[in-house]
Every structure is written in C-alpha cells, then in structure tokens.
Image (cartoon, rainbow, N blue to C red; front, side):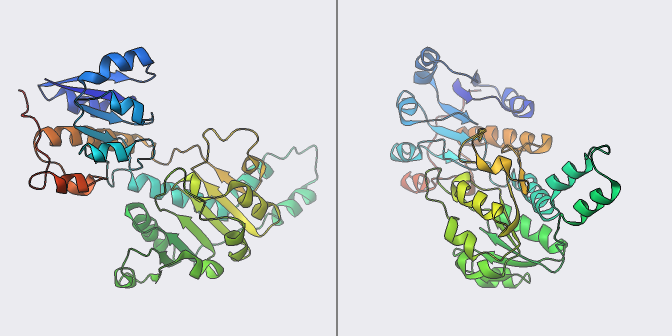
Length: 343
C-alpha cells in the first residue's frame, strides 16, 4: 500500500482518478498542524502539493518520500534543491493550465487597453450629481486603445506565452517574442518578430505581457528604468510571477500617466493588502491570482497531478513534466526505479 499525502485540497476529478486505483491510500491535510505532520510524514511515499509550502523541515520528516507532484507549474513553494539531492523527482502539470491563463491574459490586455475599471465606475455615475453633458465629457476623456495593428511583446515563449501569441495574433496585433532560449526561426515562421532581450523592444511595444518563470525571491525585471523606457501610453500585463515587477515603480508609472494602464493576476504578497498602491490606481486591472481557476482547468490540473503519482509507481514518468529532470538522469536508465505497485 502506497501512502499519498494531498497537501491541500484538489478538484473532485483528481480524487476520483486516485480512488479508482487499488493499492493507494490518501491523506488530505488542508490546514496541517505540526502534530499532524509529525504523525503522517514518516510513512508518506508521495506528496501532491497545491498551495501550501513544502519547505526543508517538512521534507526532512518524509524519509520514505519518492515523488512530489505539484498541482501547478511553479515550484517556488517547494524546496526543490533538497529533493534533487535526494533524487526525488518534482513533477508539474505541464500545459494543463496554459489555455486558462492565456485567456485570462487576453482578458487583462483587453480590460487594460479599454480602461475597463474607469468605464465601469463611470457607468455607475449618480445621475443626480452630474448633468448629461458632464457625463459625456468624462466619458470622452477616458481614453482607450484599439488592439488591431498594435505591437504586443510577449516576454517568455513557453506553454502560456505561445497561446497568448496566438490569441493576440487573432486580434491582428503585431507579435514580438522576447525569449533568449527560443530560436528566431521558430517564431518568424509564424509571422512573429523575435528579440533575445526584452529591453530591445520596450520602446516600440504598445503592450507587454509577462509569461516567464521566476523564483519568488528574484530581483524584479521591471523597475523604474524599464517602465521609463516603455512607450508612452503602453500597457503592461503580468500573469507570471509577482516578483517580476516592482509594484511601487509600476504605481509611479501609472500615476504620472506614462502608461495607459496595467493588469496583473500575480502579486508580491497575496492578498496584496490595503497599503498596496496599485489598488488605488484607476487605470489598474487586478485579479487575485485566479487565472487558472476555471472549473475545467482545476479539473485538468488535479487529474494530471494525481496521474504523475500513478505514473511513478507504474514506472512511466513523463520526463517533460519533471521540473528537476536531472534526477532521472542520475537514476539507472532514464526513469527512477519505483517500488512495485501493490494491487
């Protein structure tokens, strides 16, 4: 019997898949207390982790651990270094969330370009407070951007970036891909321009979309100098990691009118808190890190994260989903040798 700890709840479809397989026992901890962890961890063979942190201390207690499956693609809540030293693969859900996040990015682009928060606030105008003429004057002063013919720079051309590019192309936007790990021919064959460094195209992009990975403690890529180099009246959207953007510098760029608007689904801290200056910017579109939270996407991620565990014990891990694939290379053959599955 293989013991699997679900470190955080998942969609019911994931549990249905898990329960369909004999030889596995699950424990679900959504708000674990230290005493619970001390009891459960020593006998755990696999962990499926969603939102909670799998730090060094917790992992050290899991002496039988053989695999960690992340319900998502980011691993900043996991001590991957320790797991790699122990030869334990860290699996992700691959492109299970790519469609949902890319659609969300497009929603943020459209909402920022059309100044949706300002328009919504204006639509709520008290008719007793202003005349129709004053209302129409305020409406005409909102200022919005049409996307067709505009240049969008997608920083990071991974699973999500590729889908964002396709959506932006469908809106007749001129697509520039900024990614040093992508061969220019890959993007130019699709009609997209390519730059190795995003700073090369900052001055000509009407819209910048961040789709690249980053450690939670990484220095921001976008600070005051980068915002200053952006085209006046441009839009920036972040669906990647909050650590990529200096939030105060972005608030400054919005407040002084250098940028038309911005949109983000990711933050340095969640919830961002009332002292976060972005919350008070009328040209800021904000969501609470929910880009992947469609019903279909949550189901796909849950199923994939469970399937990763089953694949391990079946000796059929998918290398492309392994974040620390070097541990597979160290094992005899190309796949770690699992325990035999108990039926």
